[in-house]
Image 1 (cartoon, rainbow, N blue to C red):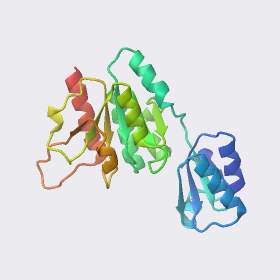
Image 2 (cartoon, rainbow, N blue to C red):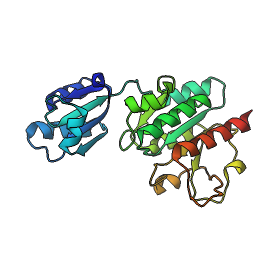
Image 3 (cartoon, helix red, strand yellow):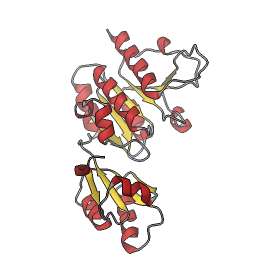
Length: 244
């Protein structure tokens, strides 16, 4: 994590949140007590910011300063509003292609996906405020700088993004093994958003119930699944192939 993207100390983080600083994630020491720490938690929950409780050893690795049990990470990018982005893309005259990430947690997978998305002409990536990978130094490095070129939106829940996409005439296609439909038999020619799940659990079952279509990759070997960033690349390039 780059030092210039950090804020440390309970009061400093509270003030940064209240000032509207572009905070991506907050790390809070487990068992932290006191009125100020309770105020911090209240502020974080009110703003629906992504935060997690971690051992003090984790905080000491993040910052050698007097962090008082709290380190916040500032996002190096400005996140888009999903309504503004979808409106802009749909009014541009091109066929929209979006990517939804359902609690993808590994920053290197996130960076690799951003890089592939930029190369395949994806119009924007939508992530959830809580539970997903942050945009940090590792994300930037793995994306080869594509994070600065790719519009990224944050929503309270992936379902919110799905409902808005569907209401805007954009089909939501889930990349999942829980279907008999192979990737190559599903149409990506119309406006669509591809949703990828987390590394361990895949797409949340409650989210999967709401999609318009499901597709899987054919697996010919003994290992049952691919790395999520590799699978995402296969889906995106199939969309490119169909649209050529």
